[in-house]
Length: 122
Image (cartoon, one colour):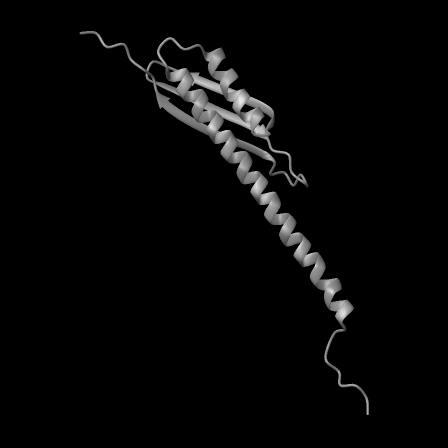
């Protein structure tokens, strides 16, 4: 009597299953790196906007602060754009987060707006 046919052999099952597991794990890591990059860009934008919103603050100091925070979080190709008017300070931080595979989603950009400090006169 022959052996009953039970479907694919063990080696064929692993040949199909291993790439699926690897893609899932690497995809989760890639997504985590991208989310980390967005969080770093968000923190850098908030800090730059808060610095620019201070009374008597310089835009150069705000840009430097945003760039330093973004760089310490791992971003590269960093741009810190500021728009400061009489009422608001808006900072946009853009950069690239290093990942395993560049699928066009390594660029991150976040924006923050803060109200400017006003001189109050009695």
